[in-house]
Image (cartoon, rainbow, N blue to C red; front, top):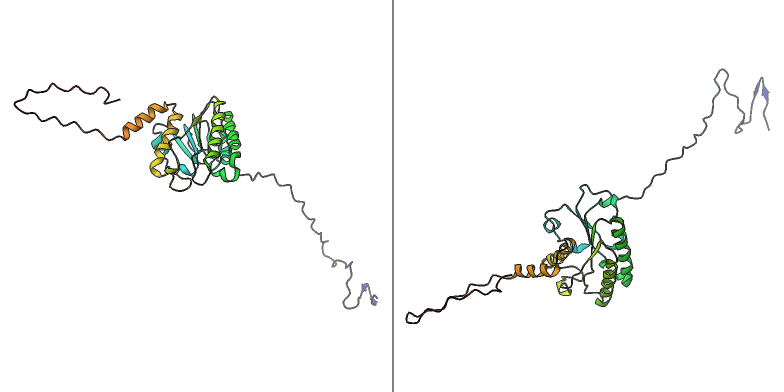
Length: 257
């Protein structure tokens, strides 16, 4: 119930409120601020984009953990080389772009072993897509695809079938070439999947030979000769003064290659 009126004021009972309380006389009208309508924010693409290599390389090597001890500068001393960690074929697909790699003359790829547990023989399909993208994205580059290395904890027949599939896929692309490693077996592994450090040069030499289009048989022969110790000089036969000297020995024609 409203209270008594005294003059021109309405007196309300204690605890009551007047929803239409007049502003004090002589005061300017108070304007309530209008809530600001938020402006639409521009769309921001939060997708991480790979950065371009700081220096344009001639040769790019995409390789998994077996490339840890691979010295790319020693392998190609006369070229600008970039070695990028590539644990699986999906990561290779992300790296295979001109935005990321530029326009290298050679691209060497060794990956896929880490996918064997999850994909089994389906790895061959993942590698086929990778080969397709590498060939189409870089038609003027020489692309080298390395076959899978053996694993101690995986059936060798599956790896052999995947490598056979990769070999067939490479043949279909004129700028794609296969680097196979028949001399590396499970005795070259210090655990289930990784090469001994002293066998990495054999692995790396095959990659280099295929990249530079060298004859594999000649390269293997030169490598074998380089590792062979020098032959000791034959000791001259003892001569007795009362016997005629034997005729001089002719050098063997096949001693050097």
